[in-house]
Length: 361
Image (cartoon, rainbow, N blue to C red; front, side, top):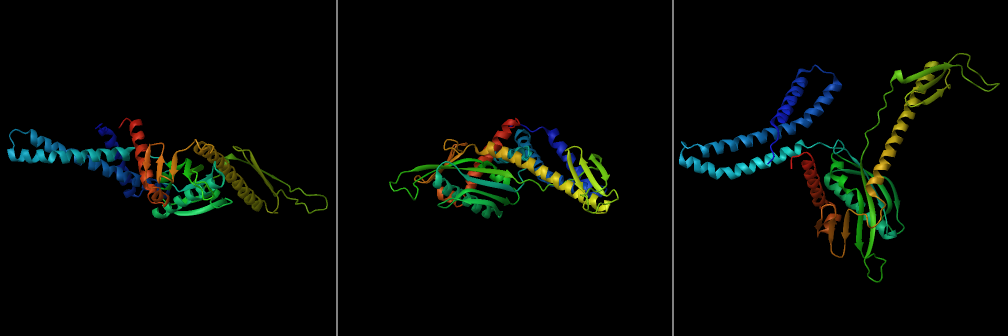
């Protein structure tokens, strides 16, 4: 058991005390209250784990001291010796739980997710398999109390999906589904197969954390605002006052020009609204580009050889190739809830990798 530095634990307890006291004092603004409240919510379970770990350590130390005390009652020493294995087990459990809760958090874990399932190699059978996968995730989401909302879909000619994209809304969705990204392979006899031959098809899955709603804050110092007379063709009414507004957003180079209203004040308000829309659109486009890059990295080409998991119908098994785990419960997994068996194993493996990386394994 690798010891956890006590100064690290003390620092967490000190920070928890400071945040608690600051909130109790009521001397910070509303924005800070929200931030500190979130921090306190994150710290509370860590502090509880620290106290449990230290209590277990103190209990074991007391038992060992009693056993090693030559002047103590022989019967008490014997009783302590009987209790020692259970105390050691409790300390190991508390130590493990504290290690896990101290691991670096993925900021996206608590988010909802965008789920994308696409048919890969295999034609109509691949589309049918993509439909099976999507239904599996929808049933899994239902078992968790999450909400699934289809954003877009393209159905296969014989059923299933060539492509389906959905929002899966709920707390902690991404943490549970993020390991599903990749190529999934199915081995089964298609309904259209008259010779009873097993076919192999593939579908790709991408799970991305749902982006936060973009809130554009425009810094006035970043703006170059010009006023000018409205322009118009000959014969048209032309505003004689300098009511037209041109705003240049210096960091992005975006320029907007509004001359529809006779009031400079109204034109400025419209121009600012238009600028915010353009900045919002630019940020969304950047996020979409990053998302497309993430998707490409996650799902590969959809080829049969690139797979993270195989669903073998004749043998009734599901094999996750990343952790060499095979479950002979194919129908239960496709029904939804039994997907937890795979997800739990993947999460455990990921935690082990993080512990090793942190030098705590």
